[in-house]
Image (cartoon, rainbow, N blue to C red; front, side, top):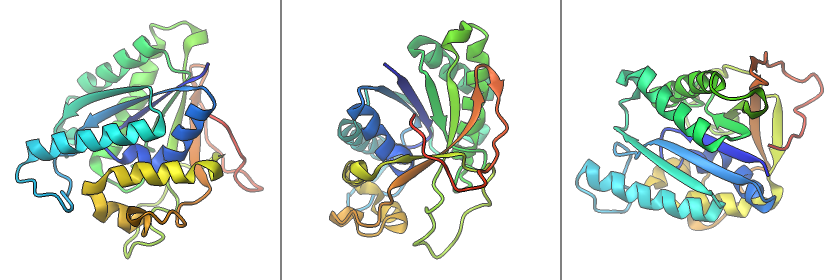
Length: 245
């Protein structure tokens, strides 16, 4: 049974980036684990009357729990760093905590944001750096048969419905997962994050109201480390190939 670990900085990142893949993993009998580094206390509160960051953090943790149920996430770890603080966090400490989770759970695959963070958010970028370091450090205490593959996840259509645009992609996409049968679960997971209605409506207009037509049929990944060695990602010449995590 394959085990897939995702490392993201905020509640809702998992649904935006990998919701369909997570639901597909559950359907295939795979175990999934999410490490959520912050509780999103600096996010918007949407339609809710929430007057302090601590209350928003707890509310968003509850929303994340609902999304995790929809997506069949087997294990959810909350690190509870302050939202927006990761660029000032102790990198060694953060990487060590992620490493400990990797060594404890022994995933076959680890997934996190790419170096551009998809949106350029500093928390996204630091999470990528810390996770990449954590995988490398975890290998030092694991046997070669336990080394996880490391993937970066991309959301190339994130800005299709936004008036602005994101940073230039830091790595080429090397594979895509077909989530055609899991678009509804992805939509339901996004809807679980009701406080983030602004962000959901930007990227997936209609989803909050139950219209999942805007959700595409693929989620996109880049393999960057395998068997204890870095992999130089190269864009496929004849289109992005289908993969399974």
